Amino acid sequence: MLNALKSRFPSYPDATSVLIKRLLQDYGRRYWKRYATAVAWMVVGAACVSTCAYLLGSAINQAYIARNFPGVVAISSATMLLFALKGIASYAQAVTMAQIGNEITAENQCRLFDKLLRQDVAFFGNRHSSEFSARITYGASSVSSVLAILITSIGRDVLTLIGLIVVMFVRSPGLSLIGLLVMAPAVLTVRHLIRRVRQLAQKGYGGSTSVLETLQETVQGVRVVKALGLEGEMRRSLQESVAAVQQAADKLARVTNRSTPLMEALAGAAIGLVLMYGGYRVIFQSGAPGEFVSFIAAFLLAYEPGKRLARLNVDLSGALVGVRVLLEVLDLPDRSAESGKPALKVDSGRIVLRNVNFSYRPNEPVLRGLSLSAEPGQVTALVGPSGGGKSTIFNLLLRFYNVQGGGDITIDGQSIGRVSDKSLREQIAYVGQDIFLFRGSVRKNIAYGRIDASDEEIIAAARPAHAHEFISQFPSGYDTPVGEHGLQLSSGQRQRIAVARALIRQAPIILLDEPTASLDSESERYVQAAIRRLYEDRTTLVIAHRLYTVTHADMIYVIENGTVVESGRHEALLRQGNRYANFFYSQFGKGASIENSPAAAE
Image 1 (cartoon, one colour):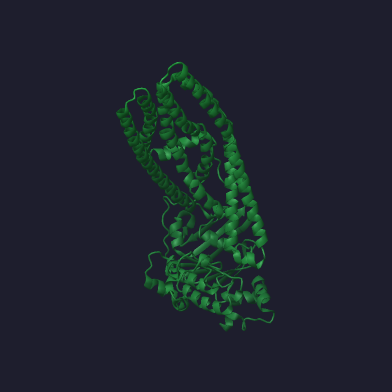
Image 2: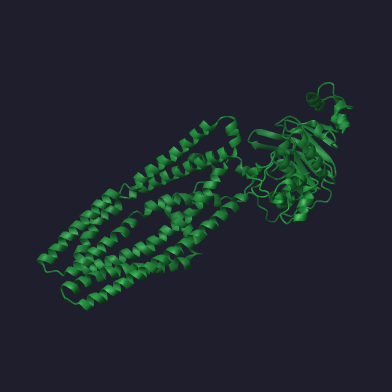
């Protein structure tokens, strides 16, 4: 899974410095004032910790050497105020950092979604939607995590450590040198872990994507899973992905904590030696006990920030995997650039394809020099065997893909490759056999055809689509939720809502991809009646496998192997007795004729 993900996106440099520099340029500059505020509060907190460690020694001296109780009270009161101030500073910096992080995460999620919308359909062809779910959740939050680690390390840990080291040297330079010399090797033990942490974090991300993929496919295809008895297979697939994630997480836990025993042992050695030397000075060299206690307090308080700083690169390496995941998408070039292209202006709506070539994969042509035309106000039907290229024509008309090999597609003489995609698609209403409804109400799904449509216009579009009748019978009417992918509605109801969505669009060009293929006869009758309303005064292209649905067409093109092999009206094509006639007789039997064909009956 991980290698597959890597192959789909441009690799981003592994250098930690490159990524951090990028983050500081993109986000640090814009949020530097708020980060500075958080660092200021961290400075206050670090100062409070260091001052408390220093005052502890003074309190001991006042109590045991000077026997000055008022002095002890004064130092105790100052310590209480310092801890209260430290609590306020900790709260303020934590809230400030959280707010910045939440804003950055939200911004990155919007940027990632916008970048995906700017890609063409081909970009999504060999990718699973769960991959983007993982990127928008994991990658978007990693940026704020990395910045938080950096700012917190600099503003809290470094400053706290500096302050405590100052207290240590002020109280006892000799003890400070002993402590630092013993703890120095602990910093070096974590350097070799960085590359391993990065590899395991990437493996964990790839496994998490596999889990999302299996879960999403199972939920969306639950009917097929149940019908085919695939519960065991789906369970096995998910368990394998979960096991891979667990294995990577276990290894990551072992690697990231591998230095802990050594660091703890060294810390214990340092503390033991310091206690031994400090005790010797107090007992045999008449050293002040306050200095010794103050040093010990500062040394112990310095241990945690020192340990976090020693692990800084390890923690950053894990978080930077998510940053790479995000930047791989954000740095993609826009594949649906609209800048500078004029809008399409449709007068009559005449569509012409001239010598169009296209292939989805190299050396596997789908269209081979195909030419045809669709006249304004007429119905043009595309028929032929599956895989001949009919749906590809619709994909090219909608600019999901671009024409290859020198051919061209024009609408009223304007090449669709030279106009903006937005203006092109505004002139087209599309209804397919696989209807996609968005999660929400019936009203909202019809209104997606024209976002600014009023309730009256929505109802006016539903009536000729024969949808108003069943919608009105719902307890919530047009506010009835359709469920995910519209699964709370029947196939016929979904189709009629799709027709209403196309009607409300009021587009001069209609594309119909066998919209009644999966319907029963009663539902098909309603949908066919609704579709006839779409034909009125519009350029209509219809893909048909059941030929009786297009016997009324003004022009029929028979498409095989990516080219037009026959064209004409239904009656003329039957008389010719070639490919269309063979298709027709294979569906209705040799006894069918022009007079008793569905066209004549209609």
